[in-house]
Image 1 (cartoon, rainbow, N blue to C red):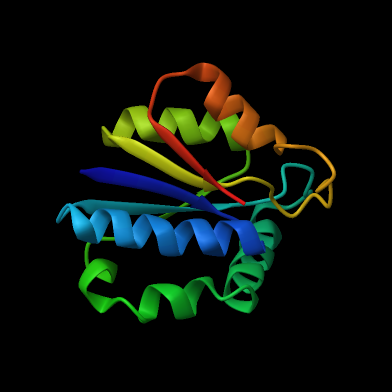
Image 2 (image 1 turned 90 degrees about the horizontal axis):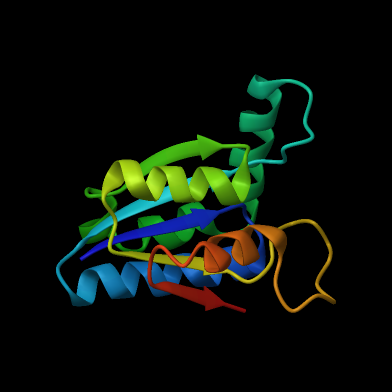
Length: 132
């Protein structure tokens, strides 16, 4: 099984990463981790640096490092067009399953789903597990 996990450093994405690692491990699968950035950021390099910092602060690196057997199979990617880019990357990588957090760092937790999760679910192209 090939699992794709988009992350942005938010709590739901860190929980999704942990779930995705377990899923890939359970099926002796492969894991792709996609770092997601703010699409409104002006400078790409600053965006990537800030996203890396958010992911480190959010526990993403610690979660990956705690599972070295999966880390070797992981690839890190960076994207700014969140929902559509997740689907494009899933197509490119030939993934079997997407695991993602219900909300990103937008601060719109009052909605049932964030826009990226909604976009990926609405496409109905892949099995998706949404982690709160």
